[in-house]
Length: 210
Ligand code: NI
Image 1 (cartoon, rainbow, N blue to C red):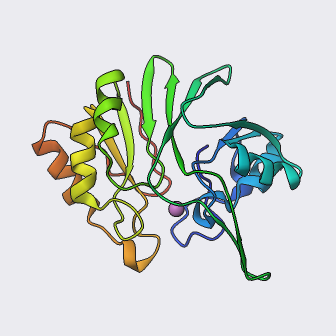
Image 2 (tube, rainbow, N blue to C red):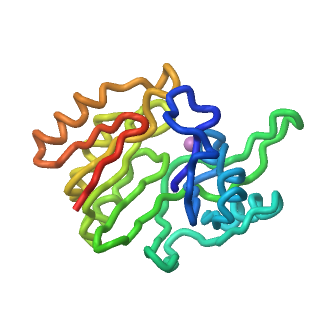
């Protein structure tokens, strides 16, 4: 599972206690990405995979963790994961103490699983190294934010899809809060016009690739 945000998510179609996983991958430390990571990891005896600092933060709470950092690869047994960079922030806001603590660098993941290469960019703006990722790797499906304001919007995400040379794209990070509402059908149609499969999913939906 990547970036579990269910209990605080008004659009979630499932609850943390329904999740069965072996690994929880975290792209960065923002609340809308890590909120349910510890309870899910604890209930499943799953390992949290994150940047060194975020893994340490989760370990302090009692989670089993696998720390890594940008550029590194690790074999999880069923899949190989490589951490990529992302242009975002990653502080952990401690509301009650009025403090923000360093949560490591924000990241993305390249996941090689069952002969497929998936790229989850994490929260990020558009960056030209996506061209490099597209050149180096044969990306079957890319998961890209389209919400705008805190990440890329749909226009930049379409450019990202082209630079990544991704065969299919699943939009992420939209609609949970009013400022990031987006028209995912229009985004998928835009991708289709570029010869890229656009897979706009609703909460709870399943999609099989390959
Ligand atoms: Ni974020």
